[in-house]
Image (cartoon, rainbow, N blue to C red; front, side):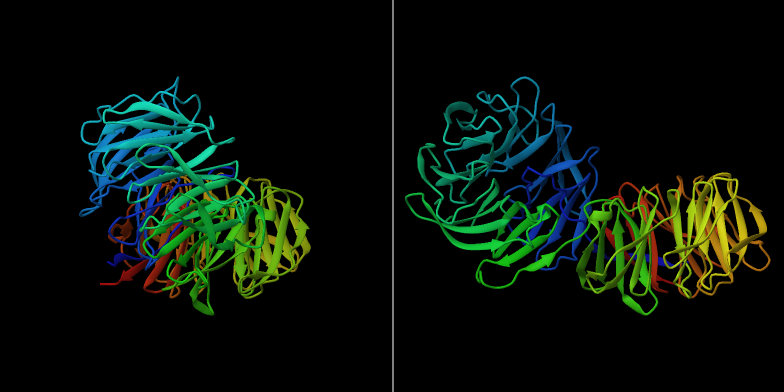
Amino acid sequence: MADVKLSETYACVPSTERGRGILISGDPKTNNILYCNGRSVIIRNLDNPQKVEVYGEHAYPVTIARYSPNAEWIASADVSGTVRIWGTHNGFVLKNEFKVLSGRIDDLQWSPDNLRIVASGDGKGKSFVRAFMWDSGSTVGEFDGHSRRVLSCAFKPSRPYRIVTCGEDFLVNFYEGPPFKFKQSLREHTNFVNCVRFSPDGSKFITVSSDKKGIIYEGKTGQKLGELSAQDGHQGSIYAVSWSPDSKQVLTVSADKTAKVWKISEDGNGKVAKTWTSGSGGVEDMLVGCLWQNDHLVTVSLGGVVNIYSASDLENDPLTLSGHIKNVSALIMFKSDQSTVLSCSYDGLIIRWIRGVGYAGKINMKDHAPIKCFAAVEGEIIFSGFNNMVWRAPIQGNECGPVEQIDVGSQPKDLSVALNAPETVLVATDSGAVLLNGLKVLSSINLGFTVTASSISPDGTEVILGGQDGKLHIYSVSGDTLTEEAVLEKHRGAITVIRYSPDVSMFASGDANREAVVWDRSTKQVKLNNMLYHTARINCLAWSPDSTMIATGSLDTNVIIYELGKPASSRKTIKAAHLGGVYGVAFADECSILSSGEDGCVRQWTVTLQ
């Protein structure tokens, strides 16, 4: 049977939240960065963005991850208040897990000697901050002084050790230790203080706030030194700040959709050296995260666009990366172009990837989100949401032409396009089917059973509708008339997906009871039996272009590849292909399969036949 290896990951982008900054962090020794999406921590290399690893061991959504100063370990924290400490030596190795706070952790930082970690966030009573030993979890100090959620914390990277915290009570608190004790509250801000960071040399720290100010303090005493100049300053909340490696500049990002590089003088005042404006000015272009990583300046927008600038040449155009934030529910490959992949997520984002290159642009359909059913033919996309509308739109590269719509009378459950007659679209609804020619309804038929999946033959002369009852109903199409030709019974669960083989001699179906079946189209007999190796519902399936292999993707997180002519038991399983479940599969060619899922990632696997 075939051997399967992961060849590329087109990564999700960081989870973002309006009105709140996000944290991305870097490896002290390489150009790897860490960010979080759902329950995943993404490790990504800025020099080669396709080089991606995903850590998915948290039970709850992850909020922050950071390398230790010696780069040996990573500490990541989640919304339940749990911190996990793990390494990446020969796979992922868990060192420790501690319950640190009773609510969401918003920030954490290591001490420079790699022995202690401070975490801040939401807690019960007054426990918004905790510092602990990395090996035992024992607490090192008392952190009084905050009355509301603590959004950020920082460890002074040189002796004598200090910890600074800031948050929603407008306070910046300064602690000396270890063991750490409250020293003073700094009350310079008049709104949420979103981020605090020490300079790499430990001589200063900076706080940035929703009051549009950045204030610089002396690192050892906490005495205020100066401010970021209001001239050319930010016009909105400043969400994040990051120092340059030489401690002489900072990068800030703001809700005003700009990123700024500031030169920090010895006396602690900041002047703008460079301003970049994000996007075309929509809400999605607000900037919520940033990182100065060696020669790379990284910014992240609310819509998940990552821009990477060169610190040594601020005039250079950035490298732009993007991707999905949410579940990727559909993958499309076109016959005429085997290098391009379209992926669609529930939130209305359609992304174009080039195999071997990665991100190649996006089509934003958020005005029409959420997208429930999605199909595409050369140069056109067809999709529907949770109302009665089906939309069609021409696409040219990353541009989408005028979107036209038709009301099909009830909510679409599935839609399928006749590939050789793309004007013809079959829309499955709760109790029947609608045949469309372009934006005209040819016929609307009530079939008397609950339809859960559908497929139309490439020439548009036959349709198969799968029911809640597990039966497959086959109809011939003549003009606007459907005539029932056969009913096939084998499935023991609701049909979830039906696909014709590229040579149109077979079709395959999958169900909610984890079984897939391959059928001979002319005899209506089962062609491949016992495809029962998933442990949960089958969400998607795809044929190889030569009609010799089938791939199924399931809620159980696995992709299984079967070869026709061989027993199902000789299958190849890709285990844990996508955290949370697989929702899209597609063959690029006989040797490459793509998958997508709940984790927001698209992966390419190389299949080697033996």
